[in-house]
Length: 344
Length: 227
Ligand SMILES: Nc1ncnc2c1ncn2[C@@H]1O[C@H](COP(=O)(O)OP(=O)(O)OP(=O)(O)O)[C@@H](O)[C@H]1O
Ligand SMILES: [Mg+2]
Image 1 (cartoon, rainbow over the protein chains, first blue to last red):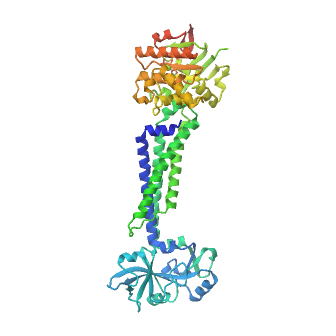
Image 2 (cartoon, each protein chain N blue to C red):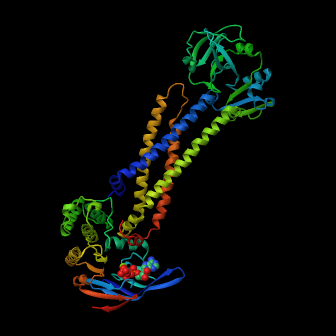
């Protein structure tokens, strides 16, 4: 006889309330985590979406990539020595459309590479968010420091930096706008990136992101919110499961008195816990993934199924711990105690 | 050999610093198939004696012999097995499982006693026992919708459905009115006689003594009278 489900069937309301609490709290956690990740993408997808590898900047730049200038001959050396290495520069700037409307963008240029867009002289490739600003393929755009005109060649998916749309331009055009000859950074994919290059300082992708001041502050706040939510909601679950089972001590005493094995009582509690938690989590995973699909273009929301699943595992583990603590209490219950307590 | 014997059973409780000896060396044996009543003033140790005999708590000293095996020397799992298969209990309150129907309470007991019966045989045993206690018309009811007397009748059914060798009852009629008490007690006697279950029950009620074959009187932790 399956006691776990018999009880759920009889006390539907109680279990429904517990289930909805788990559902709401986990949904809230998923949504906030989606927003955190969405903002992080919005802030740095240009870097985050690169393959694993190292970024190098000048030691003198003191961790500010805008101040970094890599010596041209050193750059040549690196690009020939390391397979798939790329030199690149990133700089805030503006574009004017034919109506004279100004758009802030981040100009990115690079040597030939499969990780960045190769753009011909006078052409430009923009992040797709610029479409919403009314820019279309074939439009011409200008920049006050640039003598020529940019023709929009195409759009790329979610490529942003510092919350601005990325605009890939040709290296020569970049040099003209910013009046520089050197590139700021060299990127070398993981499999062959060297540890030390004299005069240069090496950053992993994550370390590089931390050098962007706004990114760091924003992510720290959001991650704190997410973990705070996970911890509080986890504790909430644990306490709920604990209270629910401790309330039943009298019942467990009776069941023990008539000869039920303690292990069967444990199985009963765990079955209920796993059933309630997984159904509630499944529902909130479904809804948060649905939300992921219907979020409006401009809203930074990005919730991967991996993140959702790993948060769910954390929730399950915490609920399990709560139930187990309660069940340790129940192991100690003397059948006699319950009988002497009177009517249950 | 007697089915059930207590030899010099003592029980001491620690009430704070003071040790109180509640049972002071009880000797008792139950005659197979007969109904024995245990009486005595409040606090004389009747419930303590009954729960020790039923393996629900352990004695501080002495022997509790069931079929020649000493319960006070068994591990918890062996005692649990005996409780599940050879003993039945009825308490002052029915203590039914709130989320099981009357029928399910009985099926659970068969399940716990590791009954070898097949599903349909179990169902017919349940049917028969429910007829015996006059509850077959409420077999799908939950305990919360039963009256006190009805609950107690279900508790009786649960205590005997697995055909225990010994039935322990601690004031089984204390929560019922006088008319119902007699019905329930008569029922217990009838069933245990039919199934040849050895029975020990505690009571405060003089009227209930007419349902017993033997009466044991306790006073201050000792048995003072046997009849
Ligand atoms: N767990 C315990 N801890 C301490 N003292 C206890 C415990 N259980 C029982 N006692 C004491 O043992 C004495 C006998 O209790 P018991 O319940 O056996 O009496 P009883 O004869 O059944 O009384 P009643 O007729 O009122 O039910 C009482 O004084 C009680 O306070
Ligand atoms: Mg008593």
